[in-house]
Amino acid sequence: MRVTAAPDRGKANQAIIKMLAKEWRIPAGAITVAAGETDRRKTLHIAGETDLLIERLEEWARTHG
Image 1: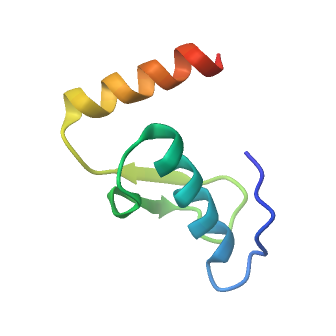
Image 2: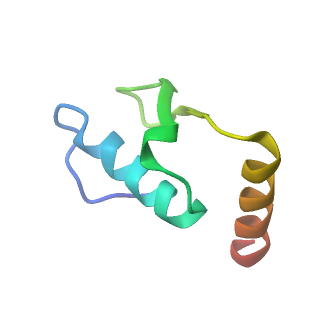
């Protein structure tokens, strides 16, 4: 994914989180960068009820795959 926000003080990371939260219909506060804060490649941690998260991600993958 690409965002237009500059990698300045976490602005790009926040833009990524905001975009994914909207796409996956989950609260932005449920997504954190677990690794790669300053790298192009990131590992995200998504908190929440596992079954619901899997359902949302599978639905998103079907429509965007």
